[in-house]
Amino acid sequence: MKKMDEMQKHQSGIAARIAFSFYTVALLIWSLIDYFKNGNTGWQFPILLIGCALYLWIQVYHNRKTR
Image (tube, rainbow, N blue to C red):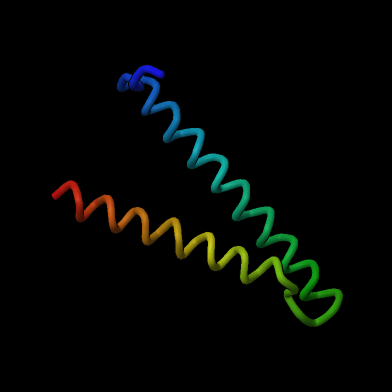
């Protein structure tokens, strides 16, 4: 495999952001629907929180690493 050039890195970053946004919104909506129907958020909400925490931790780690 060859290394990605700048354009491929940029496109990969955009695709990752869009996928993360879709995953976050889908799990949030699913959690809210379950909350209003059953009174609890189910297992979707912890997955959402773990995913967001992991994403933010990786962002902070890479920002500190590049400084």
